[in-house]
Amino acid sequence: MNSIFKWWAEKQKKGLAEAHFNLGFAYATGHLVERDIVEAIKWYRKAAELGHAGAQCNLGMLYLTDEKFHKDSEPIFWLRQAADQGYTDAAYNIGNACRLGLIGDDTSGAIKWFRNAAEQGLRWTPEFGPAVKL
Image (cartoon, rainbow, N blue to C red; front, top):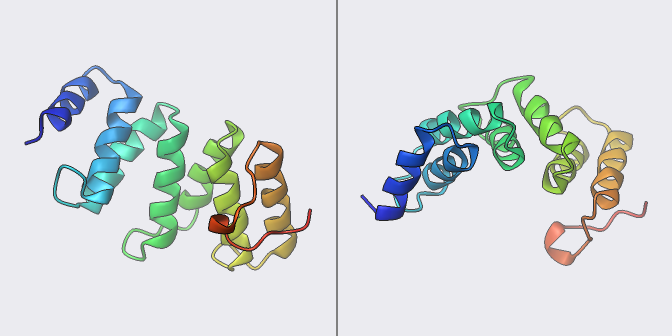
């Protein structure tokens, strides 16, 4: 096992949200360990419950995009938790989910969340997809 992974595993025992997040990220991406979405969700949830906005956003996106783990109210709950903390990626992801019909079919909701992301400082660039006139 990689020494940095061992370090995170040791730090998580102290309840450090960032360590929980890093373990979740490692399992979600297969970075340093074998990819395991069940483990990723477990660690992201621990960090999310401690208020880690990145974990809340990533957990919401896993629930939203992975059919095996999709839960009706969980994705939007966690994404909103992160967006309410000013986490721009979460606000953008909610807007995009609305635009794509993953969370209802709500164009006005999409615009609201895109605007929220922009007001939080997200800058529209080609890698974020089509620009929305606000």
